[in-house]
Length: 329
Image 1 (cartoon, rainbow, N blue to C red):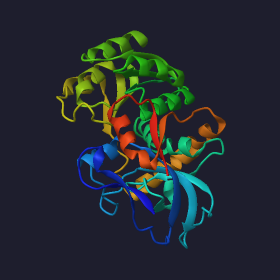
Image 2: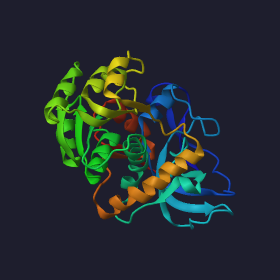
Image 3: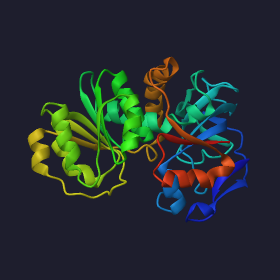
């Protein structure tokens, strides 16, 4: 099979399309999927640079955390999937190849209204957003949610899921044009944040009449911690998802205690197979029906052929993308 291959750690020039061995026929509860499209994520760039290796048991030189394709073969214990079914799902590595093997409970059926590229833009961001909002933060109807990096794949997914749940979404971005485009995905208010994070904390107080927001999904990291605490309402929940602006900051214990705040971190890739299965099941039950009826939709920035993998990485590293970058295989 053909696969995107990291030949060494470094710039995008280390990426090549190479022939590698097709995975063996699946056994037990495993499913082999013929991948038709795969999402590109920041994790793939970090893996290429040597900063984010795949967990043990996954290929170190073939990136890719999410995919869409059709069931090619199944193990003897697989009871749900049949050959030819259109599926999408998550894995800890190896998705940017023509075939990938995953447990059957790491898959969901693709709604008929999504093409391959749209489907590949869904799993990582919508599972992450759904898990952060509802499993980790317990977002409820009538509450308010703020997400940083509003124009990212997780940002647009979080806004849509928040609106669908009967809650109100706010957002921030460092880029004005991204923020303007993001508004159509369910943001009630949004603000550009440059060097001073206190700007969004003040805006939140205005938007909520001084109450603060109930939930913050933070894809930025350390730089926003102090302002996040100030922006949260009493009994607010802060979910840490990304660290693009650093991973270490000083925590004001007194504010956390006074407001009775909850701070929780989450990452999808490093979870156990059982936890991923649970997250996928909740996604299949609660998110896929919304995709099927058009209440929410994937946001695709650009679609590249597999052979254009270097251009795709350059697009992601430019920080100009809005939504998901997808590879067609």
